[in-house]
Amino acid sequence: MSFFSFGQSAEIDIVLKDAETRKRVEHKTEDGKKDKYFLLYDGETVSGNVNVTLKNPGKRLEHQGIKMEFIGQIELYYDRGNHHEFVSLVKDLARPGELTQSQAFDFEFTHVEKPYESYTGQNVKLRYFLRATVSRRLNDISKEMDIVVHTLSTYPELNSSIKMEVGIEDCLHIEFEYNKSKYHLKDVIVGKIYFLLVRLKIRHMEIDIIKRETTGTGPNVYHENDTIAKYEIMDGAPVRGESIPIRLFLAGYEMTPTMRDINKKYSVRYYLNLVLIDEEERRYFKQQEITLWRKGDIVKKSMSHQAAIASQRFKGSSSAEKALAQAQAKEQ
Amino acid sequence: MSDPTVADTRRLNSKPQDLTDAYGPPSNFLEIDVYDPQTIGVGRNRFTTYEVRMQTNLPIFKLKDSVVRRRYSDFEWLKNELERDSKIVVPPLPGKALKRQLPFRGDEGIFEDSFIEERRVGLEQFINRLAGHPLAQNERCLHMFLQDESIDRNYIPGKV
Image (cartoon, chains in turn cyan, brown):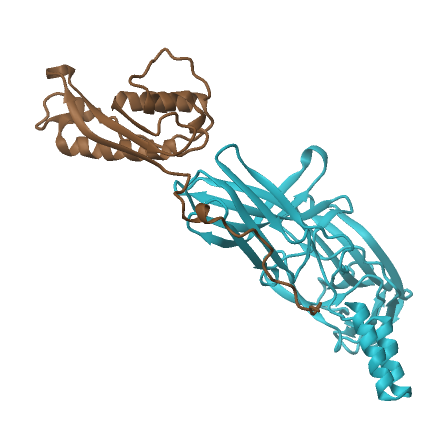
């Protein structure tokens, strides 16, 4: 800020268009706190206005230009000096001159590409923000506003189940099955564990969800593992032929979609870890990767369904009902 | 006609369990008892042996019921063999009690009844924890310890 007690300074305030109606979501900050930010999607236009309010109403503010930037960057915690900007857009709001009174400037970045989801992790952070800057000779006045981007997917065409037989020779053989390999964040993992051979004294079995954040490349790859959930699925000793069901609701856990090699800088992957514990506290486990994706909240009705609704306005009710029923049957 | 907005949480299909599997004896029966301590010899050359009885239905053990006599140093030998040859973390043995072997004690030292009982319990816990370990079950030294009449210290270490 200004070191001189005389002279002029200003406060900057960034306001998004439709700020009242736009959805806000919670996002973790680096120090673990949760804050609410405006939610934007890929391809959306980012527009609004910047209010520059002069601190001393009488004096004028000389400046070297006022600009607005939209930035998407990746920050590796161990290399804070280098921010990797993958999106960088600039709009000039005012040419060098002076402000005699507080003023508002409109800005618009049309159809901005936001290819990756906002992520705050253990060793890396990806963030999007708007930055308004009033350039001055000695020191700039700037204001940043973080926004959160979610990447949405639709139901994958191919979503095979995971089914495998594993074990220790002549000691413990199990067959495990999970109903899908790709789950959305509010999905349910439905599965079963079938015991083919049990020559151990098992005390209980649990399923853990592990998040692995990988940063760095080549010889400097670093993995950070975090157990997101531990869910006991069996208490007691099973025998051959027993089948233990699994039903794990993902909505209760804080997870992100699977992120693979984001801008060649980091990955976030999720694994299901099946753990069996015997009477002597020995642990036997099998880890399996799953893909997590984010489903959009917006429910898009199919074209045929929308056409059926539209026809209802023009034709009689019975034919419209038939059209609706046909549309619904086709969707199943 | 399931509602696509609500997830299908029904159990996956599985074979019903065979009744002989459900009600038959479990195939993981393994019990080892360490009991009947006997002090053999006189004076300074005394030592205590324990009876080690193993009952099991695990196919990896040749005998389903075996009885042998072992002393503390035999248990130590087994621990050392496994620490050297296998990758497992071997459970701890009860203490060596060197202080009890020094002269001028008021009591019987290592032949005190309470101490022998303490040691017996520790050895029983040790051998049960060890014999249940899938990797230890592959080692010849464990089978020799549990089921051979005497331990051949010149044996060739290896896997079963």
